[in-house]
Length: 166
View: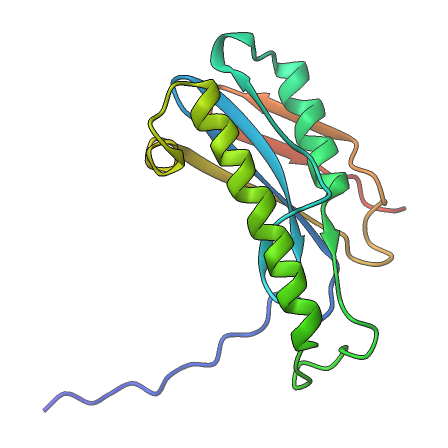
């Protein structure tokens, strides 16, 4: 009989409440879309952040880098003032209102993409994409508040350089 391994406890990669910024970069053969995430009990499509798209043939590395940087800077990390402990639940009414706003903007954005690029509906546009998620960890006293360089290299791979504080 085989001996079962004890489950190992994985260490946390970052402490609770570490501020983060996320954005998504989506590309197909027709377009590239970039949008910001808001982090509030998970990553959600940002109702106030950057959400933009362009035809694939109109993309330049400068536009891609600038828009990705703007989307990361527009991303928000939302923690209610009273919820700094992981065992405290999030405010239910505020979370429902935010999730409604997240969903409305996300669906409107995908409807716009479907109409602009000739898809039957937004689900058809969702099924045709490849997604990369860009993340910027803003650790206190470790990194500058602004990203210095966001550049695109060889199509689908992105490089993000963040200079540490000296």
